[in-house]
Amino acid sequence: MAECKLEENLTSCNCTYEPCSRKGRCCECVTYHRSAGELPACYFDAGGERTYDRSVGHFIRCRTR
Image (cartoon, rainbow, N blue to C red; front, top):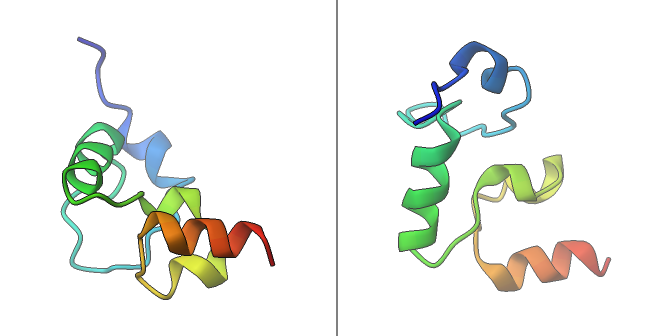
């Protein structure tokens, strides 16, 4: 298994949810959001991410603006 590059990942993580324990831990983040039927913050631009709406529908709406 590959080693997590936490510090490197944090430089590009755009998640603004401060109490998130998965910040920079991409594998954990993707697994968590996938199990909830959502997409992680990194799929959204800054405005879309700040809504905390991680739904696929929101992702599509953000992409068609």
